[in-house]
Amino acid sequence: MPVLGRESTEGLVAEQALYSVSIERLRSLVEFFIEQHNTQMPHSAFTGQTPDEIYFDTAVDLPAQLAAARTKARAERLAANRALTCSECSGQQASLLGSPIPL
Image (cartoon, rainbow, N blue to C red; front, side):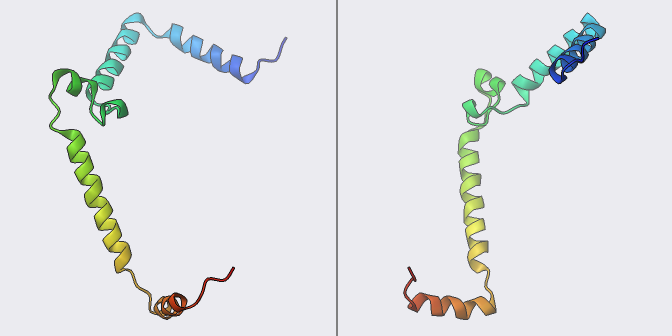
């Protein structure tokens, strides 16, 4: 008896799972996937909008909202990072500013 490789074993398992599912169940799974894909999953090709939002023109200016949120998050992150200070590092930073960079 031949030893089955990983790919063929997985293929057999997938094939068995496919044939054990009824046509009605398979149809409901495909319908569910299509609905989720079109209504819930944002697409990078549509700048974060779903296909339904593009097709029915129901998106509420999502690209502009995303850009504003990115800008705000970046500004907050920069402010937080710049506000961090360390008493030990403060003296080192001052001494490093006046010294030449070693080659």
